[in-house]
Length: 112
Image 1: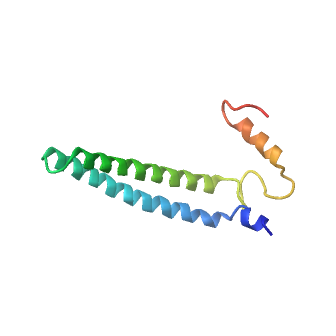
Image 2: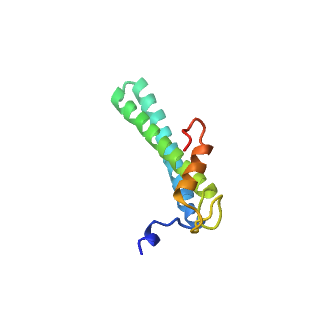
Image 3: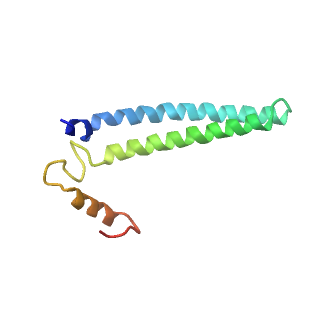
C-alpha cells in the first residue's frame, strides 16, 4: 500500500518542472527589471541602499529558483523513472547495486 505513495512517477509529471521553470524565468525577468529601477532610483537619491539590496536579493532568489527548477526538469527528463531510463524499477534492481553504480559514476567519490 505504501509503495504507491513513494514509487517513481511517470515522465508525464516532468511537465510540472517545465512550467515551474517558465514561471520562475518570468519572475526572474521582473526581479531584474525591479533591480534596474531600484539602482536608477538610488542614483537619483530617491530610494535607500537597502531597497536596492532587497531588489538584488530578489534577483538572486528568483535566479536560484529558476536554476533549481530547470535542473529538476533536466533530471526528470533524463532520469531513472518508469517508462525509460538506465535502470528499470522492477524487482531485479537492488538498492546496493544502484548505489554502487551511482558511486562509480560520480567523479571523486568513494568507491563502495
